[in-house]
Length: 113
Length: 115
Image 1 (cartoon, each protein chain N blue to C red):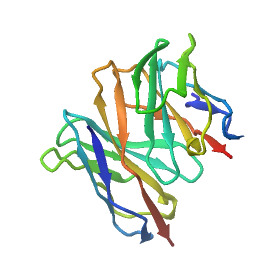
Image 2 (tube, chains in turn green, brown):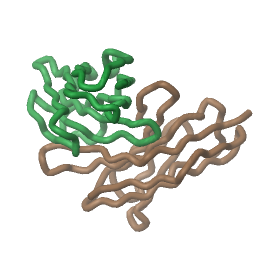
Image 3 (cartoon, rainbow over the protein chains, first blue to last red):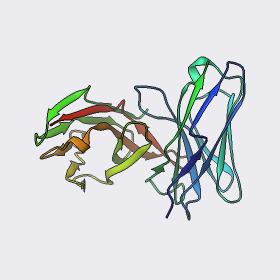
């Protein structure tokens, strides 16, 4: 079975632009979480979605938003990009929010110039 | 709030050496504890987990025991291989009260194993 998939693999944007990152969870998993990993640091929680509803949000500005689709895939959107948004964005899926184990995708490397 | 503190790296070991990576945590409740591994250029892979006090998680020769009295979850392996070279993250998962579990990670410990 396929694991968590993310697209694109790499992305280069300039300050002020908008970006959309995509994630498909493991088959049968209904919950998707997004994390930001800045170089040299551990991942930081951004959002969790289940059944198209936001179930949790980390300490990130309103420029960050996400949504989940009926097939449980998800998009992370970031507006008005800043240099500090350069990071590896990781998507993780779990069977449902009440399951404590999450499985990660390979990530999308975003570079903001 | 919750937090995870890991031993500072990088750690360099010779092949077949014994590995210990220290991890301690602070949490308000009773979290599950995890070790994830990240190979160069890749995402995170779940290495092992433990869900309650005195549980031992194990996988691929790695072990970690959930110690509630010392709030620790140290990662150990008896004989490391070159292929174990990676960054290791300790993490805890606790119910947020908002209907979900959220992971809190340490900063990671880079391990390099030399032949």
